[in-house]
Amino acid sequence: MNGKVWLVGAGPSDVGLLTVKGKEVLERAQVVVYDRLVGAGILALIPQEAETIDVGKRAGNHTMPQEEINRLLLQKAQEGKEVVRLKGGDPFLFGRGGEELELLTERDIPFEIVPGITSAISVPAYNGIPVTHRDYTSSVHIITGHKKRDEKLDLDFEALVHLKGTLVFLMGVSALSDICNGLLQAGMEPNMPAAILQQGTTAGQKKIIATVATLEQEVEKQGIETPAIIVVGKVCELGNRFAWYEKNPLFGKRVIVTRPKERSGTLCGKLRQAGAEVVEMPTIKTVPILENKALEKEIQRLKEYQYLAFTSPAGVKVFFDMLKIYHTDIRSIGSAKIAAIGKGTKRELEERGIMCDFMPEIYDGEHLGVLLGETAKDGERILIPRAAEGNLQLIEEIEKRTKAEITDLPIYKTVYESARFEPEHVDMAVFTSASTVKGFARAINKLEVKNILAVCIGKQTQAEAEKLGMNTITAKEATIDSLVECCVEAGKGRG
Image (cartoon, rainbow, N blue to C red; front, side):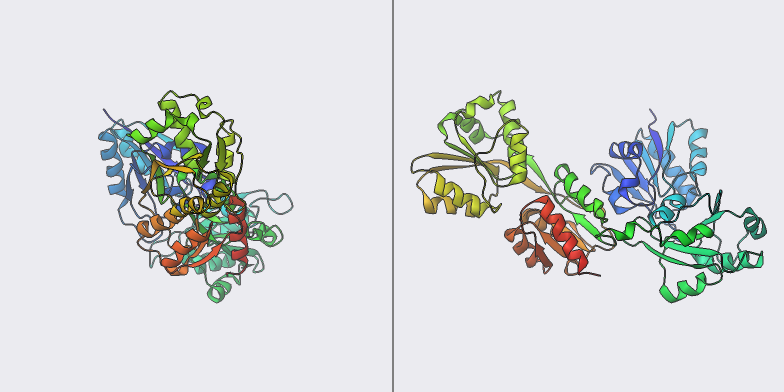
């Protein structure tokens, strides 16, 4: 039985501009055939178990010929797979999506089109340029600037000039001279505003606003990198006045978030609100210890404990999931006092209707141990359900202060994740535990860690990052908001 192919437009690169349907389709894909123009943040959404095939399509650099891509999509669909053809921008706007459908229709392969946000509209918008404005122009025209090497650009420049609308040239950086000269020779006013917009919606975003007569000269002076688009029209003069994206405090910063995927949403959202390009690279995941005789035993005698101490949100989740598996009511906790290491763990408890009795002012194992040691009396019992490789300092600090009976109960283990997609450049990596640092070190191949600022949630995490030779900065508090503030402050001091 044949599978199905989805042609999905990935948009300009910003993961927030991927459509809801595009995200849904991508997250259930079995095979993903993708272009190099697809943003690293979007590639991070691909399921770990999916087969990924880089066809390397980028201006002037095609790893796989188009005809071979067409046959590949057919082959994977005939294997019964759910196939996503992930394309930068929109699949039907100079994306050769129509060509990729021809072979599929000939062989009766089912397919769907998921349109994407084109860079022709979104990139100018991120640079403060409205492609239409009733005081300037009422039309916009999208043109491919792509040409073969040593061939003349085949465009009717006179017709384009007579349109009197905004002209957007995609894939036209190498033809910039031909475009500007062609428009001038066709009668366009030399002082017509024009702009070139580099890597829009990403940390590499840059704009040069000049005129048709001076744009080429300004590009030679200031430099530009691909991908970039060219915009010609009176609306370009609004680019500086309406600028908004570059005013964000983390504009121009690419930040890797390494915490487990299921727990990264709030952090990623806040960083994106601050203007960062965020790449999710989970380096660890938490796996419950299912065959856990020790846990089963302790659940049966929960009422014997005077204290339950939770050291992470993951620990709370796994513990209460296990109560369900063992058909144990939360009332079996009895009158035990509940301790949480920090706000995230406290919040996870509250979502289950359990109020935290105490929490240290500094959110780490050392200070939780001090608090428990000063609170628990000799002979009282403390249950600590946590990771298999827990912080020994927590136990040590308790034992320094009391002769309470401590049960250190491993209920989940930390598993390191591999990273299939590494961005070419990273400014900061955010670490929420020492294990995320260790996982990061194992996951990366190309990135030079000494050039990346490690933004750490606490001292132990910082120490682990420093072992890698990373420059580090540590949040004032072990909270998501404090981590984001730390990134913003660091961003101000790094060009």
